[in-house]
Length: 293
Image (tube, rainbow, N blue to C red; front, side, top):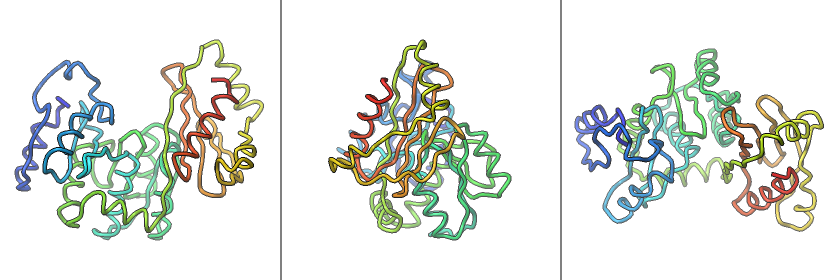
């Protein structure tokens, strides 16, 4: 994405005898007049190219190379949560390394199930990569990450490193001899599947206090009973509520909803993991109406 990783990535991949085609691998201080972020919206051209060509997978790093993205063998963008699952699974299952994980509260809970399976600890921290780095140092954890694409691996730089994550993905493919889709299928079979969703909702700044009072003073809890009664979603028994960063609702069936304000824009961010996409859509529509956003 016209970023600083272009030279070192080519050197590393060439030394590993990888056959590589490049895209946007030249200096452009305007980043092709686009956002240099490895999101699905910015990587559509790579998805199409992989879908039409004969490639094992695609790699992308952002402008400063602290984040990375994967495109699988079918030309499908790999969700950042799935990248974290892939790399932790590879480090534990194939490299047999020790250590737990830390994630922010807006990242998949499947990582917790994986850590439990391997007899390791899993920690949840507020949004902000400094919190992940601090927890990793405190407990000598193997991997830390967030659903926005940043991750850190023990023993390397004390921060996000998209170059290392990309090269670890290359190693994973070479050592396992499996495609990304095959490894993800293994993970889903072993640890289950949850559908992750992330949505931003604009609000008028004059509504900020109303929303804050509703969420934190009145301790709002979404009443999903009508959706359950209409058989639109599975039963949602509330297990606990956390105010660690915004408000987060944890349900007994391992699904969850996180609602927090953006620190930079008049946006209300809603994250959730549910059994499937249909549940996510029903609950999002309910929250939009109930919160009046």
